[in-house]
Length: 177
Image (cartoon, rainbow, N blue to C red; front, side):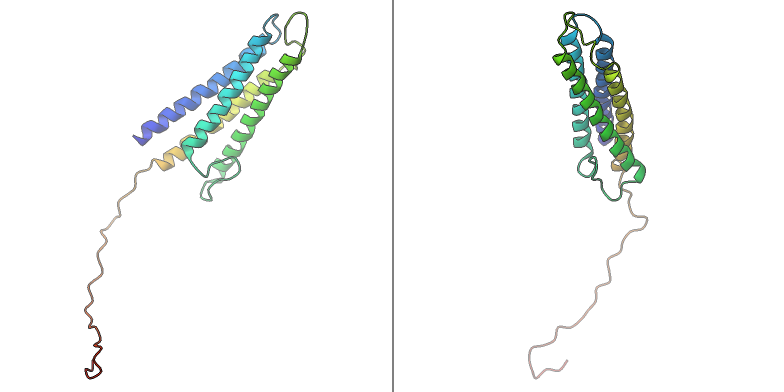
């Protein structure tokens, strides 16, 4: 049951990441097309929203202690680096998607295209989303696999300590123990 949950969450994360990457590439390809300003903005906002939703899903799925800069002390250093780089790359990509959408909304031209926005802004953000997706899937699957390990029974049975017999001292001052 727990393994199935991990696979479903990994699948959701993968789909959200691919949506973000695909929307970023589509925004870059339609950026110079005439009459596509609203389509480019829609692609950019979809890419940013799906990347943010990916972060939320992973954050909720792995639980407390696996945030960007605060991790549990027993987490290996490689996973800590993956967590940090994945969060950094995803927020950089979201920022670029939003900046590109904003450039398209402020760019008023006769042909209604986003050709004056920086070339490559959406493709760079899509690449950052790809790196973030790969690192996120890696650290999520490592953390999920450690959380899914069954509890091993002890190698030997624990015996109860022997019952000790003792006498309760009497409260009578005449009786000696």
